[in-house]
Length: 305
Image 1 (cartoon, rainbow, N blue to C red):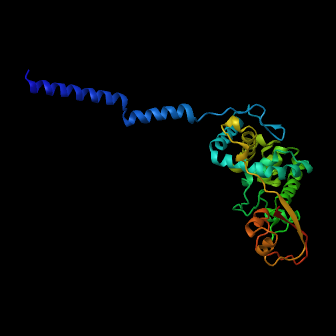
Image 2: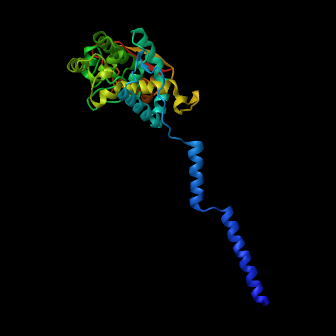
Image 3: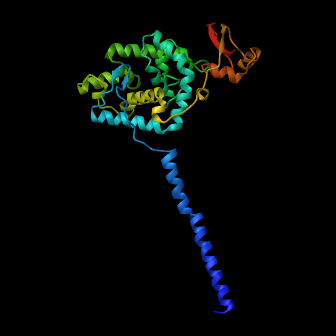
């Protein structure tokens, strides 16, 4: 072997060694991807089946999860609301803000505390309008609002008034309970109507919600309420983690009594050291930039302290 041949041989050996070392310490893209996927699935994100809690109930009335179709429907709502993480976390944050307003009104009217979750699933605690025209946290229809003494017009719509609309919801739920002798049926009737629920109970010859064959919306309604209740009461059991400072808080307000017209609400707000936006956030029932008040009705307007 001449000198040139020996140099070429040594060069090839060195080159081959480098390739082998590089392959060992620099894995391929596929190998990196597989490793990251393994680490992610093992340590950071898992899609798990959920265990239905023992004694799951609405207002003290047990959900009969020993019945196969009831168990499946309860499982569906727990899964949907657990893994729609952004929506469920936002509901937790808003609930911390608005539950303290709703809870004492329910208690005063003898309505079980679980009905606060009904308001939450109705609106997500947003001042929304349904395709049928129901409005506010409790999604009250115009006719129901007027029948129960709420003012509803283009200038003032008290369905957006949290306290007043909660009082109206309590009246409706009381009547439903008196009719059906069941808080579960009262909750279902909030969605399906008292007459509608009574007609279905009669035609199907049953006496409780869980034995009824219902349409998609009313059939899921109570299960959605119960699922959201379970998740909000035990968020850690469903994978949610947050600190108290992450939750939304209601700004402290003071009440200003007004029994005259307000020609310019923006100017009115400015005179009290706030602005139009802040006033409307706390008083969404004021629908325009003025208050007509021809009847000299007494209104209570919330303003930031």
